[in-house]
Amino acid sequence: MQLNAITCNLITKKTDCLVLIVGNQLHDNTAGSANSDNSYASRFTSTATGDLISQLQKSGDIKKTLSSSIVINNPDGLQATRLLIFSRGEAEVLDEQMFAKLTKSIGSKLASLPIKDAVISLEDTSVHERNQIWQAQKLAQSLGEQNYSSGSLKTSNKEPLSLKKAVLAIPSKKDLQKTDQACAVGFSIAKGVNLSRYLGDLPGNICTPSYLAEEAKKIASKCPKLTCKILNEKEMMTLGMGSLLSVTAGTQQPAKMIILEYSGSKKEGNPIVLVGKGVTFDSGGISLKPGAAMDEMKYDMCGAASVLGVFSAIVDIGLSINVIGIVPAVENMPGGNAIKPGDIVKSMSGQTIEILNTDAEGRLILCDALTYAGRYKPKFVIDIATLTGACVMALGSHASGLLSNNESLVKKLETAGNFCDDRVWRLPLWGEYDKQLKSNFADMANIGGRAAGTITAACFLARFTKEYTWAHLDIAGTAWRGGDKKGSTGRPVPLLTQLLIEEEKND
Image (cartoon, rainbow, N blue to C red; front, side, top):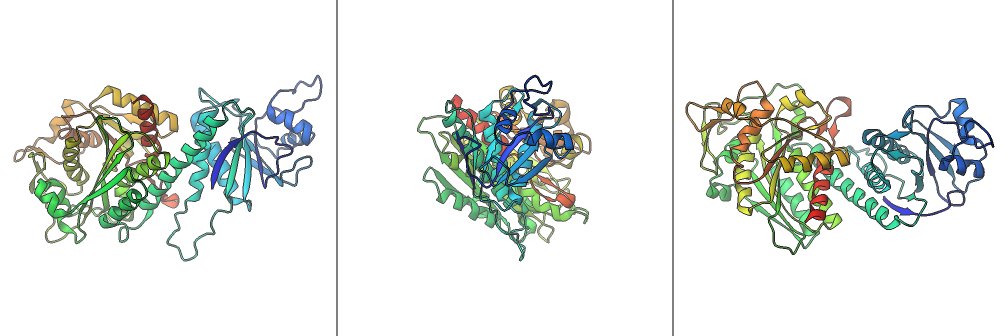
C-alpha cells in the first residue's frame, strides 16, 4: 500500500472509498441557522449530498465518540462508491494521542473493507500545535502498519490487504510537495515498525541469534551505504567480552555480535550509535523464571528488533547521516556450562562482575556492546532494552523509561517522543542508586536489590559509558502487549527514527 498527497475535487473524484472526519456540531448551512458553520465537511456535503451528515448526526448514526464511524454505500451526489465518515468526538482540537487513535481507526476500518483505493480528507481535523505535514506523516504510518499480520505462521493466514493505494486530499498545492514527502516518511517508519514487530513475534526456535544476523545482512544487501559485520564467539573472546559470553554459556545456540554501519553522509563527523539487546529467548538461566507467561520471553530481543527496524526505515528514507547499529544477540538457557549465582566474570572493559542473578543477563551483554561502541568515538550512544520488570511496574505500557548522563540528549529524546507519540519518561541516575551495586568480591554486582530495579540496572550500564554521551531506553513495558492482544508493538522505532530525522536536519 502507498499514500500520496493530492489536490482534487472530492465531489467528482472517483474512488472506492471517500473518508471524511466530522465534529459534533450539526452540519446545517441553511441561511441564518444557528448551527451554520464554515467547515469543509459542511460546505462539501451541502453541495453534494444535501443534509446527509446532519441527518446522520441527528439520528445518532454518527456517534459523538472519537473514532466512531459509519459507511454509506453509493452516496448520492458523489463519484465515490462509498462514503466513510468518522467522528472526531467532543473536542474541536485533538491532542496527539487522540489523533493517533483516530488514524489507527481509519487504517483498521479501511483494511476491513473490500476496496482497492481510498481518498482521505483531514481538512476539518485540527491537532494542538501540529500542522498538516505532521498529520500526513502520522496518517501514513498508521496506514502502513496495517500491512502487518502477526499470523504469518498460521496455515490459514488471513488474506492480504485489498487496499493498494490511498491518497490524502489537501486543499492547496502550496504544501503539496512537503505533505507528499511526509507521507513517504510515515510509510518508511511503518516499514521499520512492521519489521520490528515481525521479528519480535517470531518464536525463539526460529528467531535465534543466527536468524537475527541473517536479517541484518538482508537489510544491508539492499543499500550500498550500509555494511554488515558479524562477530562470532571466538572473535568476541579475543576482544575480551567475558560478560557477554557468560550469558550464552548454557545454550547450544551460538552468540552473534551484529554490527551495522550506515554511511549516509559524506561529512566527517562522529556517528550516532544504537545498541539493541538481543536475547532471543530468556529462560532466566539457572535463576529460572516462573513458567507462567514465559513464552513472552521471546520478546526479550525487541531492543535488537527495534535497531533493525530503525535501519530499515533510515535506508528507505535515505537519511544523510552516519549511524552505527550494534546488536549483541544471545540465548539465555540453563545447562551444564551455564553461569551460576556467585560466579564472577570479566567484561571487555576489564571490570569484574559478580553474578547474583542469572536472569539479570541483559545488562551483561549490553555492557560489552557499550564498551565496543566506544571505539567509534560516537556523537552519542543510545541502548534499547527490555531490561527490567520494574519499569513495567513504574510506567506501564505508555512510556519507555529513559535514563541518561546528558541533559541535551534527554531533551532530544523527549521532543522526538512527543512528536511521534512514542513517549519516554526520565528517571534519575543518582549516585545513591549506584551504591546498591556494591560487591564484596568483584568491582560490582549485576543487581542492586529489589528497590529501584530500573534505575540500578541503568547505573550498572552507566559504569561502561563514562567516555561518551549516552542514554538508556528501558522498553520492557512498551515493546509488546500481553494477554489476548499479545504481540509486538514495534516501539521505539518511531521515536528513534524521528530522532535521527531531526539530527539530519541539524547536522
